[in-house]
Amino acid sequence: GAVVSQHPSRVICKSGTSVKIECRSLDFQATTMFWYRQFPKQSLMLMATSNEGSKATYEQGVEKDKFLINHASLTLSTLTVTSAHPEDSSFYICSAREGQGVSYEQYFGPGTRLTVT
Amino acid sequence: SQQGEEDPQALSIQEGENATMNCSYKTSINNLQWYRQNSGRGLVHLILIRSNEREKHSGRLRVTLDTSKKSSSLLITASRAADTASYFCATGRTSYDKVIFGPGTSLSVIP
Image (cartoon, rainbow over the protein chains, first blue to last red):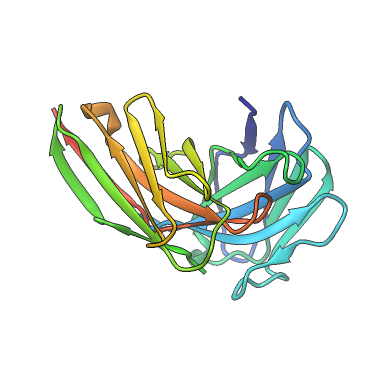
């Protein structure tokens, strides 16, 4: 099946710094990528949808200036958490979908655990 | 916003028993998917069922969909300790729409 990777898998940063998380589709071209966050023992909450070459669409309540998403190519999307605070500590998961209407399935990355100290 | 609700929130069974998890949703959907997540890990796609389908099987998994009741169930037969995980349903309103997750069911299979 299709493979999506995330880098890094774990990151610890200090409060006030920014951290970038990469999401790559390894063997297919992802026209759409999704970013989720998951707090402990909770479900995945969709943060934003990004389409290659256009601005991301953010879900209600998600600050677009804090969570910068760039989908510059068909195989790479990045999420930058700017001026991170301890409450941003979470598990961030991306997913990627090939085409529109071609495949329902989203392929999920393994996740990135962010800890802000 | 979350689309689905799942019950039970937590389920503990003995190895060999069947496990049933339910998912309800609020709006019309194009498809419903079930995922598994081991603790602190990524998601594993289990099965997708389209709105015009009523039942689907995959190995020990059986998924039903009742669009009139806006609900779905996931049955795992002959459970194994390795099935211990969190299970999420997720719905899509169209074939290419974003997928919204339910709160999940935490399944513990006791050897």
